[in-house]
Image 1: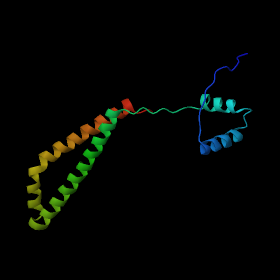
Image 2: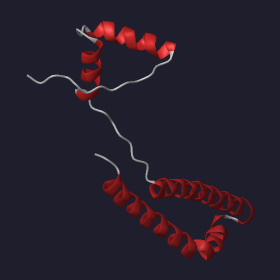
Image 3: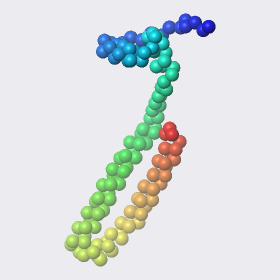
Image 4: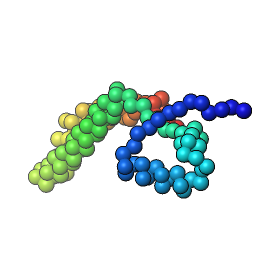
Length: 126
């Protein structure tokens, strides 16, 4: 026989106590202590660990993608304006000036996406 000699105590306000008693009555347990022990020991408890550096990375990544969308929108608007005013052929030749910078930007975006995938594999639970 293993006697129950250890005690834990919680304090509840009136609203929480009413909810607790309602759950206890629905459980069909023989005693409140058995109900509490069942809730604590037999049900999985989820723990969340907040990693500030990952949170900072996600915030910066969100800002980066917002900037990327803005640049993409501006790029398209500039091209459309050039097409309207100088024609498509001249617009394409003018846009060649920013082509290398655009390709570098796309490559950087892809590298960041790869780093993000690696971060997810290492830090996020499966």
